[in-house]
Amino acid sequence: MSAAARPDDVTIGIDFGTLSGRAVIVRVADGAELGSGVHEYEHAVMDSALTAGDGQQLPPDWALQNPADYVNVLKNAVPAALRDAGVHPQQVIGVGTDFTACTMVPTTADGTPLNELPQFADRPHAYTKLWRHHAAQPQADRINQAAHRRSEPWISRYGGFISSEWEFAKGLQLLEEDPEVYSAMEHWVEAADWIVWQLTGTYVRNACSAGYKGILQGGEYPSRGFLTELNPEFAGFVEEKLDHPIGQLGDRAGVLSAQAAAWTGLLEGIAVAVGNVDAHVTSPAADAVEDGQMVAIMGTSTCHVMNSSQLAEVPGMCGAVDGGILNGAWGYEAGQSGVGDIFAWYVKNQVPAAYEAEAQQRGLSLHELLTEKAAEQPPGAHGLIALDWHSGNRSVLVDHELSGAIIGQTLATRPEEIYRALLEATAFGTRTIIEAFNASGVPVREFVVAGGLLRNPVLMQIYADVLGLPISTITSAQGPALGSAIHAAVAAGAYPDVRAAAQAMGGRSREAYTPRPQAQLVYDRLFTEYTRLHDYFGRGGNDAMRRLKALRREALAGASEAQPETVPA
Image (tube, rainbow, N blue to C red):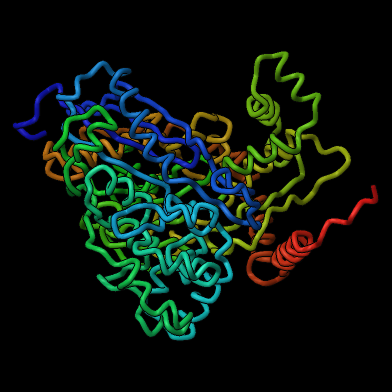
């Protein structure tokens, strides 16, 4: 720690998630978490109808948010965290933030979100497109086809595929479906950068989001000629809507403005770190920034990130970015679009009332009850295999037209057996990702888990058995917020770089779970079956999932266009 730092200095890490934002007060000297505050987004996720504007219905695969909810986190969660920690604002030397990616805000030149303009309040494309907005898949398909047809050099840095979640696909969808909103948009901004803009008054584009989600490689974006081929009106997308100065991770983006100081109760002029992504910022929180340490942030989805000194092409990876996690290293990313979301869907929609009654009687949640019952089953006893694609496949197939499947059900199948099969399916998906990295010359030597799902020891043991790897676990329950606080400490000058700050402020429990040999043998056999189904439905053996999604869209479009019948008086 810098000699100029005081023993009672703290930083604030603010983690903007899918449904809420959390602020955590962290002591700079040792990473101790002193207090926290949480604020739920008023509008949550708008995936069926606008809960702002005129309340209109949304098409399938949409997911929107209202950026005013993010500012309300600053106004509520930060003061609550200060009160909880019992620290004085004069102790706070810096603020760091992280966000879901790729969550995109269309703005005017001064950063005003377009949905806040009266003329666009009822236009869905004027709102923030959340990371899990998958309605741009047709545009992503065209981007990928054109990139391979033209042999674009950057496509290999993304495992051969650009996702529908990313900046270019969502931007092209906006242009083609609402050109008036697109024309009014002067900046297409990652929410990770927009919130820093609100804190400092300065727009700085962070290197992590730009590299992984914005196809920035070697200082260059896709060419104007490439964009023209997609759509002539898209030719100027980079220079007109996207391009902006890049800030490196751990650098200072600016200082806290008077307005943001009034919102938060902090002192004007303290350091604000360059924005970051929730997954990537968690690596230093786990003190896992060395080569081969794969960190899996497991929550509603899972993001897998890892540093390496080697650059390689890994099939289906979400990106390899120079300095994407740590300066001086290649940062790799892969991921699964649905993990905790799948378990939540099953519990919400598929569990009989008798189980809910039993859970209530015993004072358990349905998740706890199903996990307890699932733990009693030996591996393979349920006779099931599931595909974990209920929210599409992010890696290694990069196809959000894929959907979930459960094979092997009989009239004797119990709810806890299906639940366990879904837990196992997500572990098989992670193993598929790890094997792709290993086969590509980027070996995974340690698997580190962060995120809310590490609180489920049954799930963690399943992962250890399926992966055949010991599992380390982050010591913090607030990994992204701690990681943001670590970056804030670097931006404030308390540490020379992120690696040094991670060693002092981060931490993990090594080999918290180890594989059980007999269970590992069974899961090896089950993984063979998973891989067969994975390739059959995901690599062109059977396109039924894509055809069913297309049929669903047609049916819903037809229903929305149909006029209601007139009922005689």
